[in-house]
Image (tube, rainbow, N blue to C red; front, side, top):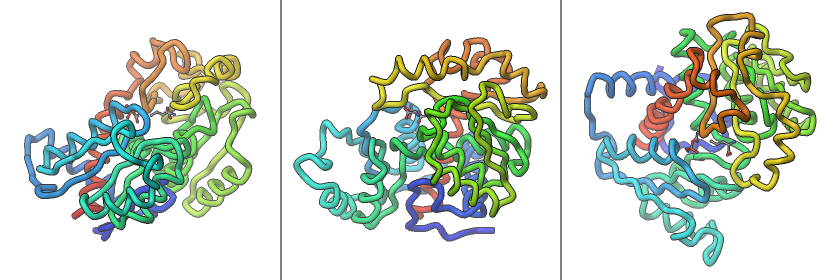
Length: 313
Ligand code: CP
Ligand code: NVA
C-alpha cells in the first residue's frame, strides 16, 4: 500500500506509524536492489538539500550526499563553523531562509529542540541526522538489516547493551515498539532512561504487540536474542565522561561469551558505528561471522534515500 508522506519531517520516529515505517523499508529494499542492478534514476533532479552538521559524521553525511547526488540532486554541506545557526542569527531565522532556498534540510547536532525548530520554521521536510536524544535514520537501517537477516521483524528480539539512555537506545526503543519486536536494554541503572520515557515506550510497545524490558544485571535478558546491539560508551559531546563510563560499562561489553548466552547460533551483532574496538565490543565479535555492521552501514544509504523519495517527491 502506498502512503502519502510528501512534506513530512523525520524527527524522532515516534512521528511515524508502523505502516509508514513498513512503507519506507519497502522503498529502501527497492532502491537497494536497483543500485545492485545498476539502474540509475534522476528523481532528485533540480532539487537541493541543506546538510547541517554541528557534530562529525562519516555514514550519515555520505549516505545523504551520495543518495541525493546520484539521483541528480544537489546536496549542500554546511558545518556550523560556516553558517549562522543560533549564534549571530536565531535558528528560527536561519530556518526561514533555508526554507526559501532548499527542498529539504538534514540536521545533525546537539539539541533536539534545534531540529524541531528547523522543522517548525522552515516549512520544508527536515530530517534528524542525530541529536543527543534521537537517531531515527540509523534505526531505519537497523530494522532493514534485521529484516534482511531473518525475513521478518515482528517477534524478533533485539537487545541493546550499554549506555541505555543515549540516542541509539532511545530510538531503537521506538523502532522496536512500532514494529512489534521484543526490545531489551541491558544497562547499569545510572544509565537508564527516565521513568517517563520507559512508560511512554511501554505504552507504544503494548499498542503494537511488542515488549520492552530493562535490566541492570550484565548479560541478563539476552536469551533468544536475534540481534545484540551496542554503541560507544560516551557519545559525541560527552567526551569528558569517558573514564566514568568505562568504569560503569566495562561489565556490559559485548564479547563472545555474551553472544553465546543468546543460545542461538544465528544471533547477529549490530553497531551503528563508529566503534571503539576493545571497549563496547571485542575485536572478535565485530570482525566475526555474526557481525552485520557493514551491511548495516550500507543500509543507511538505502533507507535515507527511501525517506527522501517518500517525503520530497
Ligand atoms: N552511525 C552514524 O551515524 O555514523 P556517522 O556518525 O559516521 O554518521
Ligand atoms: N551514540 C553515538 C552514536 C553515533 C552514531 C553518538 O551520539 O556519538
